Length: 340
Image (cartoon, rainbow, N blue to C red; front, side, top):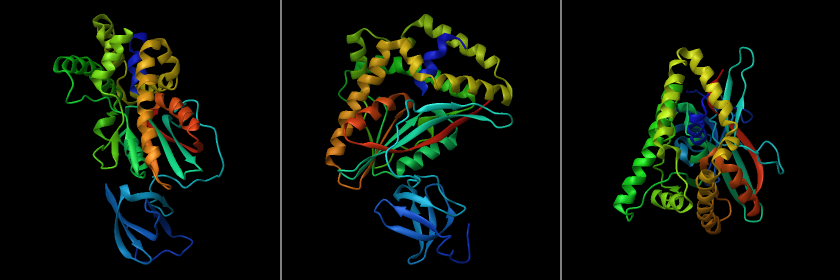
């Protein structure tokens, strides 16, 4: 695969007539701590109906649920801890599982759960790649909505920004977004913002502003590859070649495999752009963690806070979480897409 597109990859990033027996009953734990016991009925997109042993039929919004255990319709929200004690945080929050015989491979991203025993707080570090299958984003949404507060990535602009600077910054970032959308289309995948619902009252943006990021880049004399017209043209040419050679479902799966293997080496790829990485990862992480720090300081015991960022950001966030007194207690892997 041409080196001219490496940076694009690196930035991507029922019903039942009777109650079940007690041994077979489903258990739904709400964010409030209340547990419902019974069986689920007629699941829908944003809620499901639950026949509780005490309350009868109740409507349960998905964003009120912490856990859902048991039954054929068990929802992959946040699993109860299967083990106790501390475990190691992943060195990387994106991995590629190779195809084996008839079994397809997969690109997966990690979600780690951290606990602060002294304060009784839970912190979720949820890694993402920004393109994937719709089911992938639905799975991430369920995990995030199980938390009391979600702090998410998203470079945005401020109403007070200088109009000329804002327009220039948006134009330059738009080039990158166009390439990412084209790349997603070529792989037969979807873009994150088209499938993740950020319009939740307990979701907050905790990223830097677009104009602040561009100002920081100018101060350090760092630019995006899309700022270079020649580099941009070469990238588009390389993507045209890839599109021509990725016909058919098998060709698409194989191309997804190539991209998946590259994303699993995201840290190595980003090292080729140290100046850019120091801003896109390190500088933004520092700003985001200040926001996390404020929320953690104000949180009461029992609260769950999620930090939802591109997978490349998470090893540094894990280091900061450990310094803040949190210990990793669980790691889950979610499939972003299948590969060959």
